[in-house]
Structures are given as C-alpha cells and as structure tokens.
Image 1 (cartoon, rainbow, N blue to C red):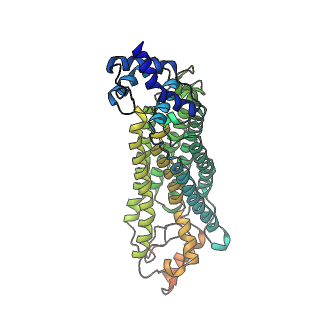
Image 2: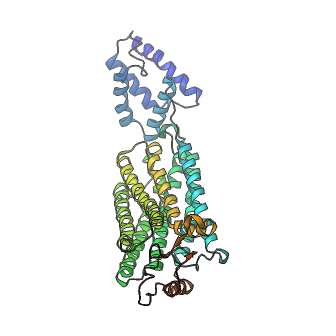
Length: 419
C-alpha cells in the first residue's frame, strides 16, 4: 500500500500536465508506469520515480506502453510526458508552407513570362505542344502548391504526438492527393521538355530517341498515378490506416516510393543527356554557350533534387513519426516540381529577355555559327539571307536552336516540323 501511495505521488505531476491540456491519461499508461516503478525504484525513492530524469525508468515504461496500449494511447502518453517534463515542442510547419509558396510563386512567374514571350508583340514563335504541356503541368502545380500550405497547417512539420488525431488523418488525406498530383505535374513537365527538343533538333535518330523517351515517360506516369490512387483497398485506408483500426490493406508503400524515385532519376538523366551530343557538335559563340550552360545547370539541379528526395525515403521505410520525418521528402518534392517548371520555361524567358535587353543577349553571325530560333519559316529565311548578305548584327526572337551552319554552301536543312 505504501508503495502504491508513493506511486500516486509521483504520478501527480503527470496528471496535472494532462489536466492542463484536458487530456485523459490512458489506463494502460498508469499500469505500465506502476509496474516499472515497482521493478526499479525503492518505495521511498521519489527521484527514481521521476520519468523526466530517470532514463532507465522511461526506457522500461516505453516497451510496455507499446505492447499494452493502442497507437492513439501511446501517442497520448508521449504527449503528456513531453508536457510534464517541459520538453520543447518542435515545429517545422513554416518550412513546408514557405517553401511551397515561394517556389510556387517563382514557378508561376516563369510560366507567365513564357506565355508573354509567345505573344506576337515579342515574336516568340508559335504556341506549340511544348507550351501546351507546360500549361497542363502548371494546372497541376497550382493545387500542389496550395496543398503544401494546407498540409503544413494540418500538422506536417510537428511530432505526431503533438498533432491532434483528426489532423493526422487530414495530413494523410492531403498527402494522398498530393501523390498523384505530383506525378501529373512531373510527367507533364518532362514531356514539355521532350516536345521542346523536337521543336529544335531535326536529326531523325535523335527524334526517334525522344519519341521513345516520351513514351516511356508517359507510361511511367500512368503506372505510378494508378498505383498511387489505388495503393490501398479500400482507398480510404490510405488516410485511415495510421492508427491500426481501419479495415483493408495497402501496397508496400516503401517499395513503391523507392521504385518511382529511381525511375524518375533515370528519366531525368536521359532527358538531360540526350541533347548534349547534339549541342556538343554546335560551334557556338562563348556568350551563347554560357546561356545554354546555365539552362542545363538548372536541369541538372532538378536531377540532384530527385536524388536528394530519394535519400529522404530512407526515413520513409522506418518512420513512426511521419508528420515530422516526411518534411524533407515534402519540401524536396515541392522544389523538384517548381524548379522543373522554371527550367522548362527558361528558353522562352531567354527569348523575352533578349527582346527587352538586346545588348546582353546580342551576337553577330560572323562570330560563331548556330543561332537561336523558333523553328519558323521566318527564321529559315533569315538564315538563308545570312548566307548571301554581308554579315551584320542580327537579333532573333525565339527560343530554339536550329542546327545549321550559316556558312555552309549547301541549303540549310529545315528544322521546323509541323505539330
């Protein structure tokens, strides 16, 4: 009886912390705490009974709670323990929302500039399939960006035991929608780049390779969108299964995440590598080479982000605190989508800026061969005229790379292909 009374004294602080938050201490927690104290502490050793300072006691209670308590009761126990001991409450929700809003704003700015560059006023070339696909990508990117704010407000960025149970469900519900929206935006952006390559590179073998890559990318997107949508049966188990009470079963989410990320990196590398050989054969002026290198460095950054996102999936497999551990995966996914949009819009942005700031982007044809063009018949006539007339500074207002040598005595090969 004396031991039990001392136990109640040691439990008083725990109860007061729970009452302050209007939380009821689970019965299983009281049972486990009483059992651990009786095994480790003398009846009069109050210091031993303090779970905040006695690491050994807390280590003895934890597995008992995990065995005898439900998931919800275990989380409640951890929350009360943090409050009782005055441990700091970690919060990275702002990181998620700010990353989403800032990145989304920059992506939307790049997209807007690309659309402005297509206006007849700026002679940015016709609206093509690459532009249509970037519009589709932006349609998915906008809700993806908005959801980053909602998921942060729901609790992504906090330790799961400090997130209300209804908000845990909300985080997983938003995450479920985010998954297939992410794939849709990602694939649309990649295909936009593929169509851009078709716009500017005329060689038959290269174009066949791009069509094959485009088909693989589209198949990848369709497969993983369907896998994401139907990852659980019934579907609602995707956001209800976290507490172990919802019926149904789910796929191996860890294997799914790793497989999709690995395929994504391979596709990124292929998309980045294919045009390098074509570009290496072009004799370009140094300033133009710098511009192209900048654009491709942004593309390589997207690949690096994909690799970093794959690294964060290491936590995905073993996390019991997903509202905290998924933060890195969340913001790297957001950055990947937004930087991808910006990268895809850079050639058109260059065209627009060249029109506005001609002194920075200008070059003379006699300095180096190869010009930026839009694949239009007007650009072909400019090149043919350049073969006959004395050289003088010219400016082109489009975003493509016709692979012709303006000093070649043969008629230039057409690089415009109707879409």
